[in-house]
Image 1: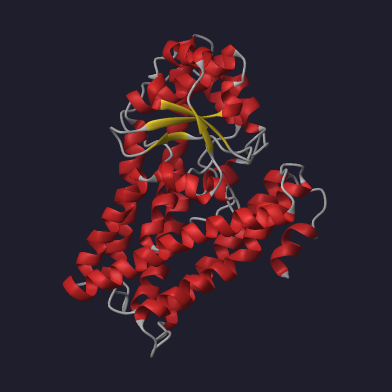
Image 2 (image 1 turned 180 degrees about the vertical axis):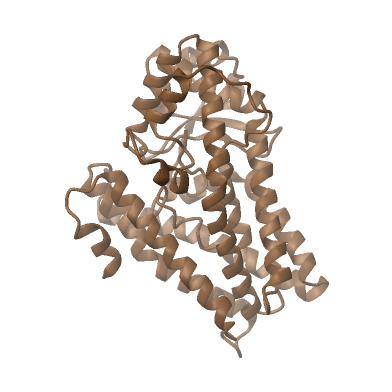
Length: 389
C-alpha cells in the first residue's frame, strides 16, 4: 500500500521527517479528492434517504482515513520509541476516537440538512457557525470523550506554584494522557476557560515550571487566546459562506450538495494550513518574550523550549520554507534566536493557536483535514487539543 511505503521504504528518516511526509500525503490526498468532487459535481447516493446517505459518506471518509491513522498513530510512534501501546490497545483507542469524531460529523451534517429543509441553506450556515462556537465550549469534554485524559486537582505544592505564577489554582486541572505530545492549554469558551496543565509539566523543576505557567498566564490575560479562538471561528464561518456562495450545486438541501460543501470547506481548510501558521508563529514568539520578561531570564525560556520540543517535533532546526508552510510553532533554534534579538514593540493582535483551533472547529464545517495534518494523524488524544507551544 502506497501510504505505508511513504514511510517504511525510507530508512534513516527522523520522527519529524516521517510524520511530515505522512501529513503531506494525507492532506494532499484529501485536497485531490475535494478538487475532483468540485470538478465533477457527482449526484451521489441518490435514491437513499439523506440521513442514510450522509452516514455512508462519513463511513467512507473514516475508511479512507484509516490507513493514514494507523501509520501516524501506531506504526511511526512504535518505530521511534514514542508509544507504550500495542496494536490492540491502539485500535481500541482509535475506535473510540473515530466514533466520537464520526458522530460529530454525522450530527452536524444531519443538523444542516434538517435546518436547510425547514429554513433554507443560509440558515444552515448560521447553525454550523454556532456549532463551531459549541465545539469551543465543549473542547474539554470532547477531549475526554475522544481519548483517556486523566484529570486531577492540583496538589498543595502545585497550588502554591500556580498562585505564584498568577494563576487561579481553582481554574487549573492537571492532565495526563498516553501521548507525549499532549500540551493541554486553555479549554472552554473565552471568559469561562479552565487550564489543563500536563502532568509532566507539573513535575518539572521549579524554574522550568515557572516558564510554562507564565506562558499560559500571558496567553489568557493578554487576550491572545481569545483572539485565536475568534479568528479561527471567523475564518471557518467565512469559508462556509464562500463555499455556499460560489461553489455550484453546493448546499444543504441534499447529500450531494452537502458533499460539495465538505469538499469546498476542505479546500478552505487547506488555504488555512498555508496562511494561518504565520499568525500562530508570531503569537508563540510574543508569549516567549513576555515569559522571558516576567522570569527575567531569556536563556531559561530558551532551555525550556528546547526541552519540551523533544516531546513534540524533536526537531531543533528546520528550513525556513518548511517552517513557513507546515509549522505553526517555530523550531526551538528559531525561538531561541528571536529571544536573543532586541525586543520589538508587542503587537496587539497575535491570535495564539489560530491555525490549530481552526482545524479543530472545522469539524462543524465538515472539513476532512482536521485529522489529516502531521501533528495529530491517528492520535485521538490530540484531535480536540492539538499539540503546540
